[in-house]
Length: 72
Image 1 (cartoon, rainbow, N blue to C red):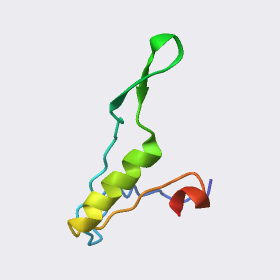
Image 2 (cartoon, rainbow, N blue to C red; image 1 turned 45 degrees about the horizontal axis):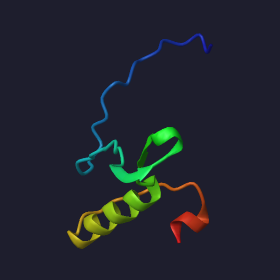
Image 3 (spheres, rainbow, N blue to C red; image 1 turned 30 degrees about the vertical axis):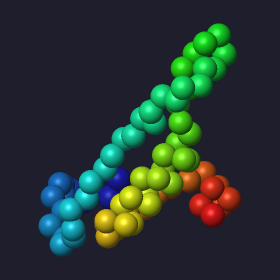
């Protein structure tokens, strides 16, 4: 593209705190959906409870939601 030699930068040596990423599957509820299918707790409710627990423990965290209303 530029005609110049390219150097790969594969290591980020900038200082930062530890990052932890979590994938979360909400638990099943006692409710039944269509044709008796199991129903999970909403992701919004799970995120709210998890964020509350992390905040109480003094953990810095961030949660992404789909809308402003969901954040409020």
